[in-house]
Image (cartoon, rainbow over all chains, first blue to last red; front, side, top):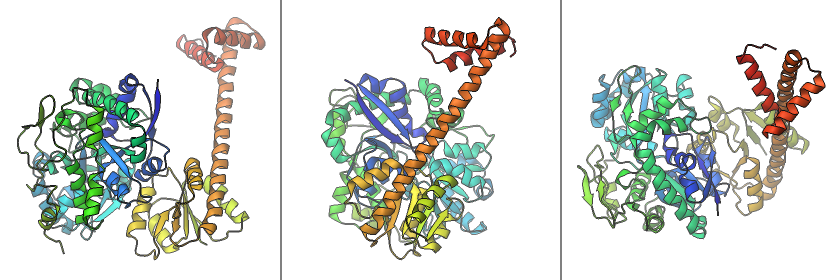
Length: 404
Length: 193
């Protein structure tokens, strides 16, 4: 029997696993007819999910937490049992602005701490407060940008203007001079670089080496009423993710994503993030960044509760939510490793033994306890060397110097 | 009650505005979601904002609703969550409505119902227009194919059409598909029209 399932997505390279699941038969093999619904804004994607026009969505992880906490319009309990990717963001600034930064782009990207300080100095030289586009208040991108700027003493609410606009409008807004830069998921940063409008200034993978990004989000009640469908979908997605991670399939995948129904951008731009060959300045040789975007390896899809709590800690840090034990519990419960384990119990996917870990503690690839198969976690350091212990959120929050 | 319609398509906004005016609302403004539309909206201090659910500018608008100090009262989408059927109809019709907190449900409901009806009417009109356009371009393609057949095989118009139709039936295709294939083949072979 075939089950029809509607999933909303935004035109981004990291919708890859959903697209592959539909176009390369992984969903069909599990008896699921996937209908992927393209939306342009996160607000629309959120509403389609919350009000039941779709059963699931390709969602910014912080947005899933925010909707559950009642911070983004209609509150609704969401469940995220699967991470669609890790990493994949890029901060680009106009070539004029970037001229005040380290001219060697490879060195610039390799040293986010140094670049953050250069950036702080460049703000003073710029003709106005730099206007930086972010895709949403509750996006991994905005949170990462705030984290990075603050490390150099820049107050993101005072020293720059953060302007919200959906990813597919970023390049246009830059062309019109409405923004001086933006941080977004691929291929939009690459599109701005290719158009000669901007240079890469920082890449997500260098700010947090394994940064939580998009999740597959369901309404919690729906996921609980339809466990069989959820499980089949997750099984289809892990296979699709393995296919997406395989370099042999990158050209095919880039071609699929380039279609007007999906990302609607040239395949060669999309391929850059997939293969980790990042062009930071138009016309220059790509910079190898093999961990630019991960789909499957290192148990990428596993929804570590500690990552939901890291997001929560940043929302508290920027005054977006009050810190109390009940909210901590609610935020952590958005990520659902229990569903992931149930769905993939009989698969060959390596399964972490724990549901939480220290975030930012792994410097070198590390073999960890796994219920099955071999599981190696990649380096997950934050560029400032901080470690997030989900059991000690208060201490972590106290470690940040107030900016004013 | 001040109502602001944020819309890029002039036609849909006009259809909606007209309906609202007929129903007796007279403080209506249309703002296209471009440039500094957020600042304009802040100055207007609307009670209700109506917008296409799929508009890419909604993230920008919602951010403004969170951070704006100019708007004294918080605005939320569908402040009253009790009417599920109404909200469902609005989402299906592609209407998003942001309403000032404290505005009574009885006052908002007729506006929302009207917006839903007008959005649906507009969508129907649009799809009829699209169908008419497709029908017109289909007819042009079939006419071209017919004239190729008439010229090259000295057929009457009626026979040319009958030939296209029987070819389509035999191949399980639409007439317009067969006609398009014929035109392409004829161009490749340099047959001309």
